[in-house]
Image 1: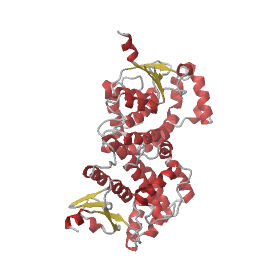
Image 2 (image 1 turned 45 degrees about the vertical axis):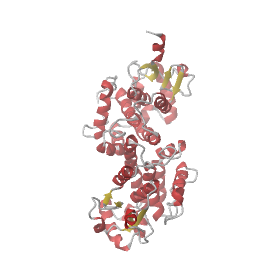
Image 3 (image 1 turned 30 degrees about the vertical axis):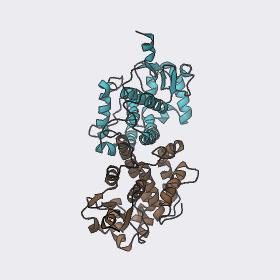
Image 4 (image 1 turned 60 degrees about the vertical axis):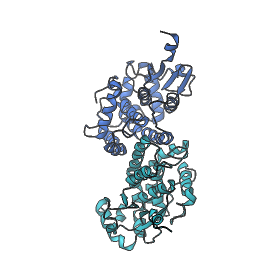
Length: 237
Length: 237
């Protein structure tokens, strides 16, 4: 193989647990789906929270970080925009207005769904971390939450009901069309799907019932790209 | 003037209060902004809840209903899609993906913001209704709420705090770009703006503080189209 061909492969630093194959970051998942949407090959390199020095030249403290030749791009939103400009085929956004609207959906997902899931998943995440990440995770999250991980964790039934209610606008949308992007998935779909992959990677919790249109939508995305997301290490959903 | 030119003017049935000029429907407001976005002239005809027979041929029990020549289109989402197809200049959506994403934002607005505002505004709405609408409104809403309008009404400070919190994803978006549609307003902006015009038409309540990026965004839309929305009858915001 020519040297040029080797260096053409994209590299993504991707958060992993104790098992190299357990990839649980919702921010990495949205990018991994976006890379496949673009038809790009990527090497997904396991990374742990304490390995800050491996991404020290990026603007971020965490992954995803994408390497494309000599370029290093950090932050999932910046990576998605970089991919859209650099590899314009198979658009992730479909134009400037949709890019703007996707930013709203990103904040909706991160401010509405992620906090509820963090309550539900935090102990499962901790238990699946690489041992070298556990002290860092506990200390940084307990400082942020102002309580222990165990105190922060919510009883499942209560938090699942809150999560189900929070999904109402997504449910109403998917009752009328198969994807947030209409007839085809777009980056907004991958953003929200990333939240579900976060849960699936670390917890046996059942977040959706089969007659929910969101269940069907998640199933479609699990099956997309030859079952890429379904074949990832995780719990059955 | 030629007969053809007269019949070319669009007509919109628009919910009005006791005063013909008090137009308070959030669903009508999104369409009135969309019509101006398209550069279309429209005659806005006051309509009241009890005037079902005037829109009896439509699929809806309420306005907006648009008449375009011999065509009658009901439901704000259907009207917006009709306008986009029939008058493609000055796109409201910018493509199929953005159309899909706008549907999500529509449901977010209607399921998250509207219910909170209904608690805040219901008594003000009732007091501004045309006398012939008041009995209908009280009966239908009290049946839907399962309590009297006065019981349903929430104390302002509590509901404003809930509303402010619910706006978080919009606030984060508008911290980074001037409109939901990015650098220019799109139909999603008009959907959310309609909720604010609903409040402004009937209530002196102050929903936003000046240092909120949403305040600036609302101000821009109040000033758009030669101050069309700001010149409408309502309370100062």
